[in-house]
Image (cartoon, rainbow, N blue to C red; front, side, top):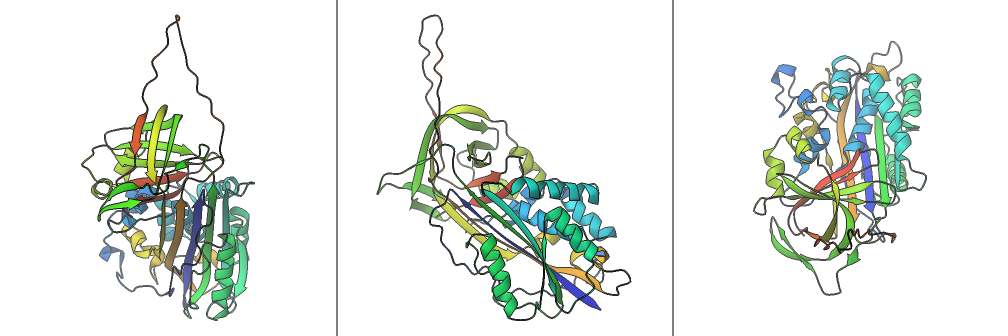
Length: 418
């Protein structure tokens, strides 16, 4: 008997946020039914192979969700951790494509990396938290304790037994996600799951942090004119001038890297050519080219930054996007090999029917004020003329990227207008 394994990802981040809004229904109905086509690997025509995406997943995901009509946000890390939980029970070609997608040579490397990430990102101060869980249907008894035990050890995942087709699952699952995202994703599903759903793999990522150097809000009544893809608009802004901002530029972008108190950072990327739209750069370059363009060498400069406050949210299935990246076996009934999740001699066949991703981000000027020192160097009795600050005005579409202290990309997206 074939059963569906539905991978569900919930995540939220709130950056330097006070009074974030609550109450967004990300997914009206979660459907856990696999598409029958294409029926063979020969009929499968993705935009990329998993080998081409390997090592560049973050930028492939940004490229796929980038939109000229709305602001976007996604968490490559959350997607990776949820699919790594699936990979821990995958075998043969299914395991190979999931591992290759994120650049792993083997399962041992994936598990070591996942365990390290979960440990590193659960910060004592609560600035970042990562929670994983496994929800198994009460009527399905073929999930191996060895598999769930491995998830507990590597991913610190908690296992729940519930009736996934019962309406009570809506309140229970939403409640768990609501708690782990500090109330910012209170309702992710609105209906129970389909009869063939036997298990959910859930990742919740929460981020709340403070700037090292706090921005100042624009004076009351003063706004920033943002030249968006849908025309000009006036929006609330903030500014910062500091001698010690990490700044970089290359043939594609001008960029600043803004530090949070826990060592994380937000990078803002503006197109270097004033007449070029950042969304054109995203659209016209491959994931590997985008990765190279955004791998910049920063140095401390005196920078005057003017930028908008912004917030964005996302909620959708990633199945078609992952298929475009070359994932075939994992989603296909009759092709997927997830036997590593099952007890010995089980006759069940599992496949992942969907991967659902929800994210929200808000960025403003709030944060903890930090002391800073500026050193004026003189020599031979002559004063050195202070250089004027670099002006970095974020008044057109841009890319933003939030990185953990380790360099792992937590969130990535584009802002196209207000």
